[in-house]
Length: 144
Image (cartoon, one colour):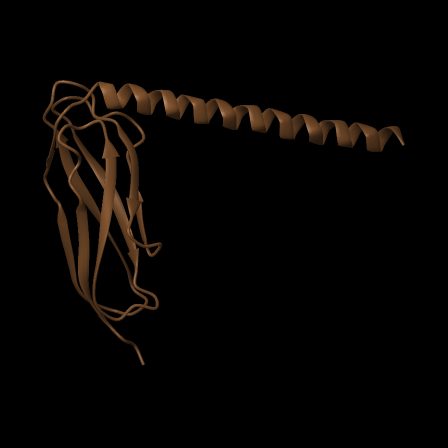
């Protein structure tokens, strides 16, 4: 019986510690977002559109959109989201220092798609003006 109590105690401790860790991460991200929105910089896109050409349905493509921090403060990417679940953006986790270049990697899965398609990537950052929209587009040939 003591063994079961011990296992239950350990499991409860693990869950409580994990919940506290997640709360700290959420609070840290909220604080970082708040600071970023008040401490703005400027961004210059090196790449804003990627045309992947013609691919077969089911193929995956990826592209690294490049940008440069042309302002005087660190550039912080708060979030990057796509217009569809078939497109996954990956934002840099670390701030981009003034004068440095960063990338947002975007992966697109054409499964279940056919014809011309375009997907938009929205980026929230501490930039003024706002970070421009990114676009990935191309033609998908139906595989029979």
